Figure 1 (cartoon, one colour):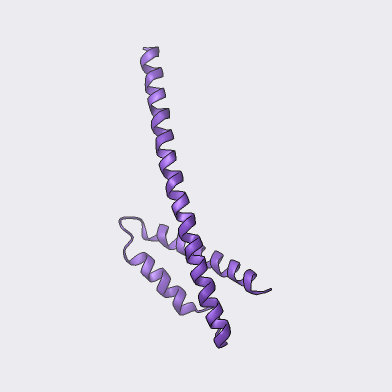
Figure 2 (figure 1 turned 90 degrees about the vertical axis):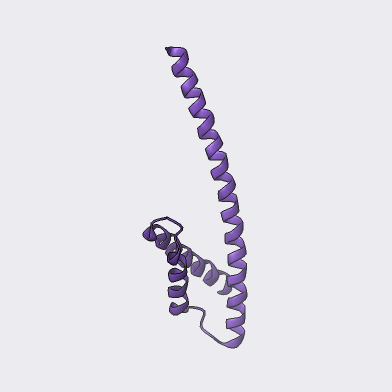
Amino acid sequence: MKTTLFNDIANYDNEIQTLRTQINLIDDKIVELLKERLTLVYQVREIKKIEGMPFFCPNREEVILANATTNTKGLEKEYIQDIYQTLIEATRKVADQKFSN
């Protein structure tokens, strides 16, 4: 009985490690996409600065949230909305810091 239990635990540990490795790979992709997104935001900010336009655009943020929550691919709408709200706020903060110099 102990051997079977130990084997089950070892198998679960291996499965957990495999799943965590996959999660880590996805996390790496997310960070890469966030970097790419931020680069584009900086480009928008530069253009708006040259044109004398304000960076903050509540309508654009509403569009981003609406787009993100239109097709949640089976995820809870509130989950996606919370993530995007955080993303928008963090992006604005980082862009403000970069362009305040």
